[in-house]
Length: 371
Image 1 (cartoon, rainbow, N blue to C red):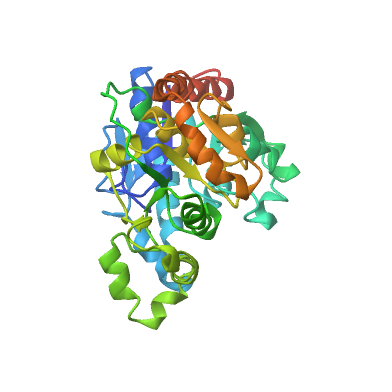
Image 2 (cartoon, rainbow, N blue to C red):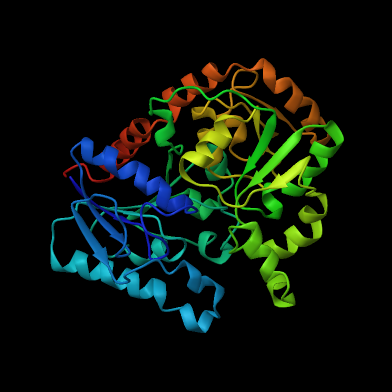
């Protein structure tokens, strides 16, 4: 089977630091190739993932362009998609298209004569005029959790072939356990939906040390954000405004610290050494990459029971969830009763890359049975 996987024009695969969808693809593709699938990857030129063939328009990721006015950037996705369509038209050797490009990907490939699987990585309350009226005879969609698909508009849900949970290479990696420290961590982009302001308030009230790790808008380092905030225009970014008005006043450098974006082994050690990973969610998290990473590193999860968290966490065994924000502090202190080894065992069973790849291969074979 030959599958064209469309990663889009925004970031290389794998990404350097932040890049949720690109990290998912970087986790999936090697396992698919081990299963005998040939992969054509539509991406940007500086992607380093080993594949059988690449399709690229742009030499590098175009993510920074998202900060520019729409009329300056509206051609980026069409240019990328057009190159993919051209590749499909030139050679009749692709059995299935697996698309990961938000919104535009759903509407591009329905008339190529190939089966199409479009993976939904995001909040399905977005794009109601598209998702609420969608029709296609050839495009099928899948989600990254059952709760995400359950919230989809009926028109989109009618095209669903189910869901595949996200995976992390950490779940299959041999790694010596890291001694637990005293800190609790919130890992992820800082914005209202992730609830870092709530986490900081709970840390001060319940008396535990909290580390916030992740970017604020386009700023990955505290010094860069501090410099940017000297310009009032920086506060027009909604994530920067959220940081300035709701999170920063609680970051005292002692009880609550922000360390910016942390990557690679440093990030893994910080997460593995935490006594708990806190997810004070205000939105219905669709996939939960950071959740499965925490479990794979032996760190119990404490959070609000929203979105995918209840289906990822084995209550009392790998984490503690609540519907009451006021209970989070007590649960953080109770997280010490959860064995890190149980978290790692469950992650290896459910969230290893081979598990995700096998699930996708079953979907491919279902949609392209003659391949």
